[in-house]
Length: 397
Image (tube, rainbow, N blue to C red; front, side, top):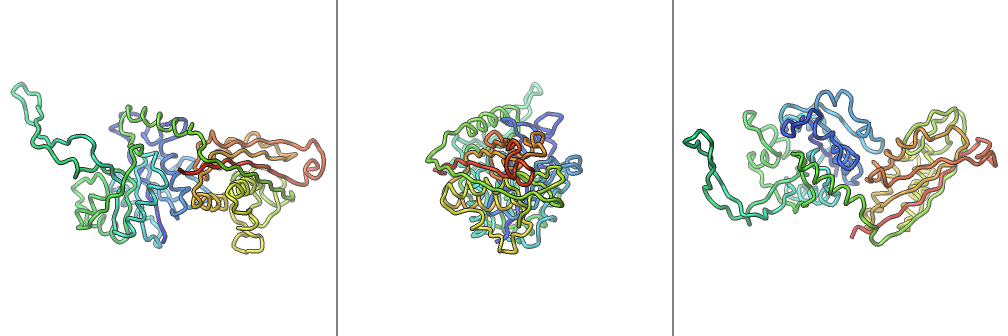
């Protein structure tokens, strides 16, 4: 099953009241958009991501959307949400069986919620995440008062057992979404795609949402989001496992030097069957070893032509997916690169961010350090490069 994800990020946050689109605002040190996109970039069931952005952002997308491990398409959004989604849908891969749509302003959807929504859409044709109403729900009407001020009155009390508050992700079989978008009344503004599917005559299955999957709409929401992010970033390890990794490659002219998915200016690069990224290889061995799944050579052997020239970030994505399947998630990683020259200090932040994006971590949980071998052995002579890594994994429950 080929699954495409659309991130609806075409709005300018007029209700938020700021000069900067709200999806670019920072939550605990990271942009809201980056957090929202990351779960889909690193999700093993998602094959591509299409992001609808305002025109000025689409012309020059943020660097964190230039992902090496999964294809990302950027489109220019429209005036309304449904216009942005329609533009993004036109860019979806023709192979897509399921299309998942997510609000850029919801930075805390979990991989489990995404998986459950995809499964429900595959079974029912259309599905959305939603949480039951907890408060008594009133339907109201507003009338003009005698003094010119509007006054609001209760018309009826609704049965809250039947009321759900819609969230995203929302997922649809491709044919269902195509008909829903095509049949949308251009004069009516839909607040979500589930409404379009309903109007087109489809039944939409409800998937249990998450209370932390909030939508950042107001300044108060931004404060709440910051609290959620900081709490999540400081979670202690549950049942933990640690793994170590090591990789070594010769350095030769004519090869790019790629470390942590970042190309480092250098007259020599690492020789290998893939892109020979020793940082990603060491981390991959560490996370696989923590769960007892062997090593990179076992899963991605250099005797297999499909891995020739492969991006090591992509291999790391695959290794992470295996870890998730076994009930674990990566807590943090620490890498030491041993290289005589060039110096990598100016590239460390970019490397950390690249690795964090792939593993679905806050960048504070990724450490990269550079060391030399003080002129000793092949590394000291500039003939080789090596990396050591350790990864801490924790059970998902």
